[in-house]
Length: 120
Image (cartoon, rainbow, N blue to C red; front, top):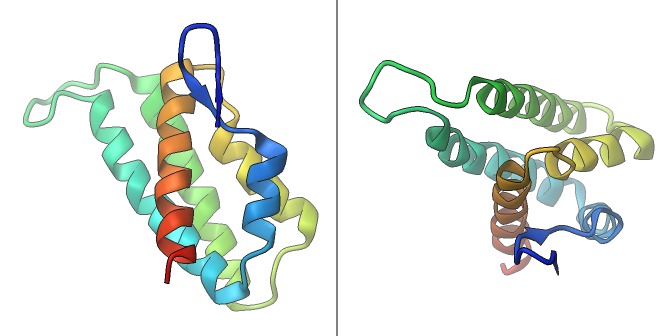
């Protein structure tokens, strides 16, 4: 993690890619599932929990798109694995956002998920 002037943590994407690519196939699948689940927590910040409105629709759509691609990558790993370019694209999609808050929350989800997979 790198701290910006404002104290917002951002992930070093090349280091995140390296950490992901070091995982074994089963660990990658577990990581992707955990990351997708963690994004549901991040997504809850986009709407009034218990209400009917969405306060941050653009962020919620982006989270949904991330989950779609992350789960697609997990399904590909169950069959024939995606090539390195596809794996790296998933990591960039996870961590490269214009929205600083979403970028920080995605960084949290990445760390949470990779720690759970590598600490066993």
